Image (cartoon, rainbow, N blue to C red):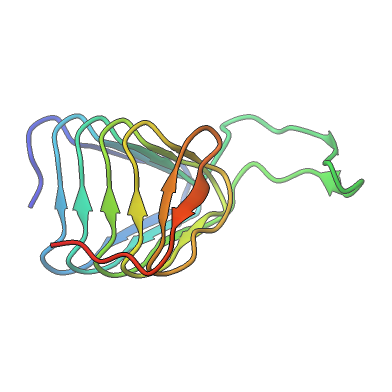
Amino acid sequence: MLYDFVNFYLDKPGAEIVIGDRTYINRRTEIMCKQSVVIGSDCAISWDVVITDTDYHQITGLDANGSVMNDDAKPVRIGNHVWIGCRAIILKGVTIGSGAIVAAGSVVTKDVPAGTLVAGVPAKVVKHDVHWT
């Protein structure tokens, strides 16, 4: 189910956004895609969430590990039965495991293990073995 003012941006030929069954996306959420964003089934995505697989600009240089950065898009994968709180931001290259919860206002920059609660800027695991209904 899509609520009012949900926006999808497919900003490159071949870009794809895939959304599973019974997932709802609340108002004013935006999904920006140059490559691939896949959202599983039975997810609850709150209002004003941003999910993006791109920086929209080419950034070159070295990352914290000394590796060359030169990617403007990396796929985002969100598992089944994931709850993403209001105003969370999911950045490129992130995989969120099934059953995970992303707290409101979090900025997710790294993968989220299944069944965990993450919170903060940047998001960090704060609880394990969580369940939500």
